[in-house]
Image (tube, rainbow, N blue to C red; front, side):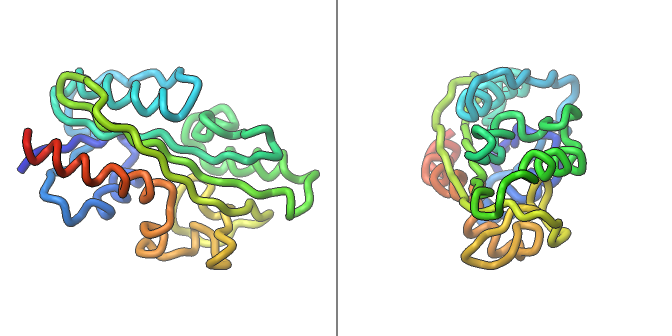
Length: 201
């Protein structure tokens, strides 16, 4: 079975991707399975640049196919923030509570109808030599609400209301989320190339 390395140490993200690709005959690993992997600096100016940097950089280090993605929350009324800085919006990388608190503070002066937002994900597949082979993008639109609802997901999920479902990402089941999320859309677009390239490797 061909190894597919997911370019992250985020166990929640690994779990989500493994669930979405559960039917594919690949052995999904994260970076924790390898010793001495240096973190790739995400200093690109876009989600696409960061996804490509991570996929290529980690592939060169582990010598295997790497799927990396860069994703975040975009709030137009906040000039696109948190954007590419979503994971470290409040300063500390990956501190969901602080990031959510800052987001609510920044939006507190705007009425509900101005709090539209969307999640975006850019997924990138690099070959074992670090060559970028495919880039795909997915979006999911919603609205930021002023209270936390649901305990599922991670990041801004408990605040991100999907209007069609009247529930936040924190409330939706994994099955529904995997059908509509930004990450699932990007990964769905990547699936045919992933199957073709890895099956022939």
